[in-house]
Amino acid sequence: MERSIVHMDLDTFFVSCERLIDSRLKDRPVLIGGTSDRGVVASCSYEARKFGVHSAMPMRMAKQLCPEAIVLRGNSGIYTKYSKLVTEVVASEVPLYEKSSIDEFYIDLTGMDQFFGCHQLASELRQKIISETGLPISFGLSVNKTVSKIATGEAKPNNEIKIHSGAEKFFLAPLSVRKIPMVGQKTYNSLCDLGIRKIKTVQEMPIDMMTKVFGKHGSTLWKKANGIDNNPVIKHQERKSISTERTFDKDTIDVQKLRTILIAMTENLIFQLRRGNKLTACVSVKIRYSDFQTYTKQKSIPYSASDDAILPIVKELYNSLYQRRLLVRLIGVKFSNLVNGGHQVNLFEDNEKMLNLYQAMDKMREKHGDRAVIRAAGLGAKSISRWNPFNGEPPPLLANRRS
Image (cartoon, rainbow, N blue to C red; front, top):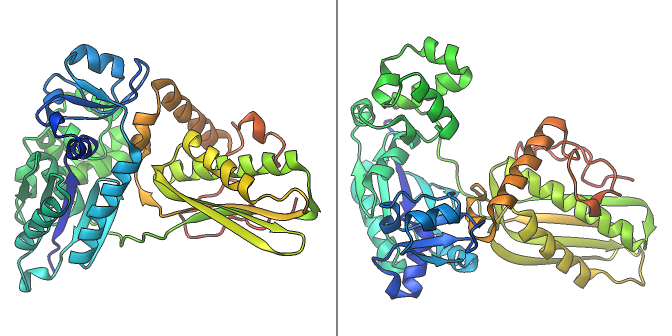
């Protein structure tokens, strides 16, 4: 059966949310992000993009390009709220969807043609989202995720495009290779160095040549350029979570030891979030005392994978649970309500220096192990094993580890 895959993306999501709150921002160039010169642009309106501004650009440069822009720090709580509203509408209308980030979705409508017509169903869903949330949204419809995502980009702002089966290569050919989702700045520069700027050029190249030049990455790039993508839409599960615990051989009341281990475990788990390209919206802390009484406390947060956003919450929850007069047998940390998405969701809270620090730390951990770089506060904790919580296997040394 021929697949029908829809990619939906909320247009300039952060800016659109701000405009719902303050209508004076409509039709004005708006920048969302760190307000200092060292801040980073998390989102910008189309009016600002005309001046060459784009997300992840240093705020200093953005204000130079568009001095009349209105700069807002942003409100992650508001963005999380509207993201959940859109998710509820999507979940109520379609049989299978994947929430790939805070502001975009993949929807599998395969087989729905015999009942409603996939394009009509997608169009009606888009209109329902607009009417119930007030947010502009665009979509692309095709036989796979890659072509649909690219089509959404071409449909923006606030529009829709259907790519008929068999027309994928023709649609992609005149577009820049930068439009292919997996092509970052580094790959784009490499392609340009070879004189490859249009997707059509990649389509005409032998796959063996692409593989020889770019390795396995080149084969995937060639397939996407030719509109080939068999990746399925993965069913969204709101309650998906990762966690880690530490059980002690000897119950302890050593305050410094408990705090050190808690920080080390949390920092490691946050790194696993970023490595798995995940964001969490709920943080939980668990304590089990020597009498086996177990207490858990949780707090909802804006979607994040940031040490600076999550660590203070963990400490706050721990402090509210910990009773100094009792010995502690176990402590644990859990992140739930996970969604796919990179750290860009929190860019308005971060500055350029912090983002570069995260990237450098994560690279060192990937190369030398999860404990290669740690905070001074976590130095007292024993080595935590390298573990990927998204492969479906339990952590070999984290859960109920004896120290």
